[in-house]
Image (tube, rainbow, N blue to C red; front, side, top):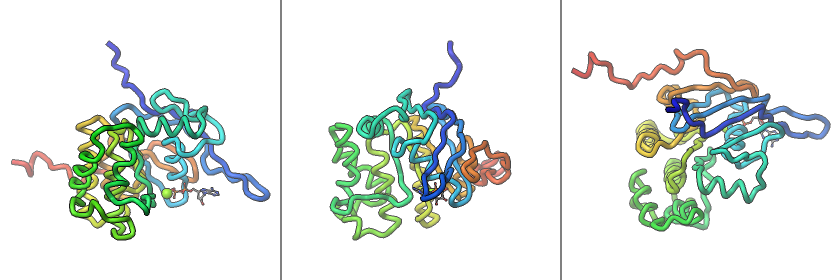
Length: 245
Ligand SMILES: Nc1ncnc2c1ncn2[C@@H]1O[C@H](COP(=O)(O)OP(=O)(O)O)[C@@H](O)[C@H]1O
Ligand SMILES: [Mg+2]
């Protein structure tokens, strides 16, 4: 018996810096992080602290300046763009802060795209089901320009789910949604985690969403650490025994 949990993501001494005209700007200080398969983890921290930069590298969308990132034992830092896009197609879902829907495709076509890239057969049927789940069953043929910001966000979420990713990265997934829709979307994320064992890595400003994750880490000026002030993340939604019976 091996009780050690299997890790899905391993980061060793990862840094990111960008070259400006006359100086180098360090965006991420050496980062160490291990995420176990099936774990839910929230990345919190103020605006401009490097959360989106880190998420892009973890998901294989961008490369680190130095250090190592292993996703399902693929060394993303050693792969070229085409190889990384293959790893993404097979294992990764991503919900971007800016949605990044394709304007010339309908809602349904946007959602189906990752499934087609991953050669999933029932892409259309799954796409319709997912859009129904996020409450957009009557918007299948709408183009992004015909959808509100919150609706585009929900299309992006359905798109992230379709290829049954092993790990889902979400950058402020509820940032553009009203409270009720946000709660519904959050439930969908955690259902996916429970039903399929999908690992969730969420960037969020919402303390309630952070509290629903098993673990919270904090980004501060490019430095990542385990969140210390856990009282910020006390789950307020959990029913106690007293108010159940
Ligand atoms: N390509 C880039 N060139 C220069 N600065 C950048 C670049 N990308 C991000 N930054 C800077 O890096 C910092 C972190 O950005 P970001 O990761 O988007 O932060 P967060 O998501 O936490 O708000 C910001 O100060 C931003 O201006
Ligand atoms: Mg950001």
